[in-house]
Image 1 (spheres, rainbow, N blue to C red):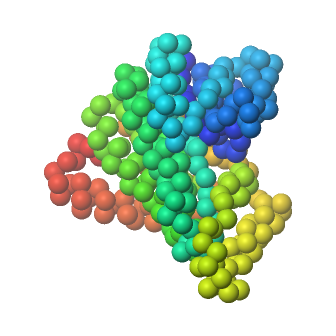
Image 2 (image 1 turned 90 degrees about the vertical axis):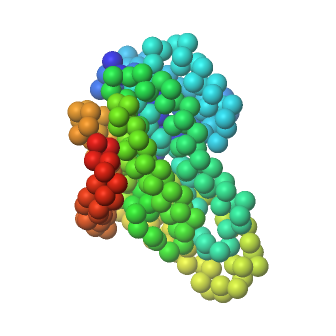
Length: 289
């Protein structure tokens, strides 16, 4: 039975993935921040479902922006488990607004969760994953890691960085027996859309006049779409994650867009040949593909 650790399991994709994998027989560590405070109800909810269905879910504290929190969980898993097979970096936050009006501090906060948080957990848990016979890291990115959407500039930047980091890891970890794969969700009613703060720079916002209200209108349009019959099912993401885990080592794709993809998969296919044929082969590193 593989042991899987999922970050950001209090809601959305992380919560659904924890249940999906546990119901398929995986030993799941569902992690989240503030399990004795803000997320206490979610913790107890997952634990009650696990007890009722007799499935394996351990809810644990993890703040991906904290070295101490991450290292403490590594130590705990070393004690309580034989190892770790799969790390799913799902924790994320989305800043939507006038890009210029986000402060440097806010931009750093966005990156600390979406990008540096992934680096932090990957580095910490790779010591365990490398010992697995089928080690795997799955990073939850976004279409916004491949396409740029107006008013999502800070979020897009964090996800573009995540995509680059993930692809480099995939090459470099292959000789060590660890796969890396990226899932790029399209728009889903996961709660992520309203997770970010309002822009800090009021003076800059004022300079945009009526345009400053455009991001809010966009969010309202998305909200209306999510309440319609055409809204996609968030369960598609856990199902895609499960399929990646169950593929044979070495056969897992570097990235795939799921849901409404705005032709992102076509983009991925076109850039793949350039990336691997013109860059990796030119470097005479075909063994990393």
